[in-house]
Length: 331
Image (cartoon, rainbow, N blue to C red; front, side):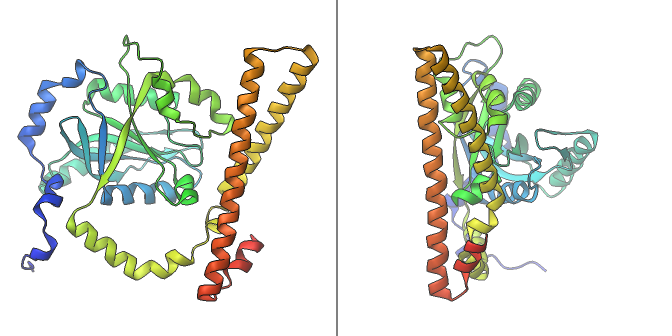
């Protein structure tokens, strides 16, 4: 049965980003402006539906990396993501690779989309980095570089589900690789990390490839129908949302942060002992001082999050009488 149109759910201006223009997209692809300017794409706009699907998929993977594809189109120097879907791939704690089964799945999925008049093309892939930030590893750089050679335009999106829960906001990054033979400015590698904390076992991989890609700004949008759906979800789950305690839902990540921080402090103390024994001074000593300041800042951040969680649990306990404080202290 076909329902009559509801004018209250239609806003032409807000819903315009969902209107796919195949001819306009084809014209941009044929012009290939990114071949003359490797940083032609500057922004990625992700629909709320695609964002929720990617975050939920990333969260469901736990400590394992998961992977999926994104559909959308090009609008000027902006890559617009209208939808996303997960792939049936096997992941490990350090990498995720698509196999033949995933390739067959992608072909069949796009075929079904075409039958439903969903004409948007695949313009990117996403995967998760549970607990260690949004950046590209060496394998990620190789995957993205290969896609840019044969499937342009293409973008890589990384989501950290653990930090998303811990910070109560989506931890996400979008990246494109720099073509071989192009020498990027020195400041490029600073844009990929932005001072983010990376676990000790990932630091080497994090810094080794940061000069081979650049970050894009990430924005999100939602249609009027999306707004109605999100409002309905909020009306249904607002009690559970307010009752959640980040100290409980994310305690494994917090524990891993503290363990990693302890390892880094131990490594820094050994370096200090070595420098004091040899009497070395100069750039190496300054680098150690900067590292200690960074460690101190991270310690303060963890302590602040713990205090905030305890205060929130106490406030919820008084407002709702749910015993949240006792749960937090028992954690």
